Image (tube, rainbow, N blue to C red):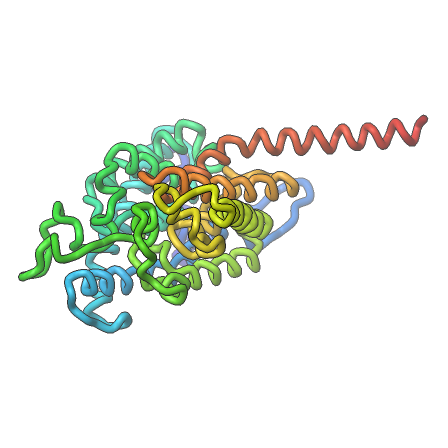
Length: 399
């Protein structure tokens, strides 16, 4: 009898044990369940929830690796030292800062999942496989690990478990964690000193000879919100050689990940496309307002309003949020027409918040969370509209 059969036998012999869900989670991660259906007709498919989650994690890996290189590259650029982007020096700095974020995210998040599974007596759910990878990619690199741990506990318990676990939550768990961090510890989540390792004077890890006054971690969004000129080229923004959250800077890699998710039928292309359209429409409206002379250069909104409408797709966390979080199948709209409406409003509202709230110029998080709440309402009215149209056609035929 092989190892797989022995493990299945061990699981069957201990099926009444409280700790079995924790064992099953590890077991089914390594092997397929040794269970078959006994009645009825069933469609056999190679995909399941765990496989789907693993595919999303696979799409995130290039963003993670690029983020490690970019973390080190931005650190050395901030302190005035020149290194190649793909150098080992840049990678090691990024690795030592990003890897602890990933470890804390998974250890704490999965720990909470295991505890709830044992208490409730159900199988460990796979939903946190993706959330655990998303969280380190959407936070500042120097955020204290204990803050991240507290936020993860809050996000998993309040954002997911209280609603019934994976598949029942109404808000995206990763964005719930980020929202908690933003409102609970705002000085660590905003400003021009938090996005580059070593730029924040609160973090005592500056290299010898560097002073906090000599370095800056300012992002494009932060600079524009303060009325400054854009200091990076379109090429820098597209490829990702800019400060920002660990995984959000490279639009190219995010675009490739989006195509991969569409090809594997995991991400909704309707939501992605409609979000882009919504953002472009809002950007064009703001450009039109500036062109019409309805707002002057003295206005605090002028810099972001006058930014080329398509540049909004390349800066901030818009692309990352649209590809990986707006398309969350649990919290997004489920109907075809609802997905178009849902995505368009996310893009439209994201740019609106970005321009009208200089204190928090990145609006995609709030836009997605807001539309998570309204997604069921959108689907309800889409379904009711379809029902009314069909009843109207039926009456016309019977008349």
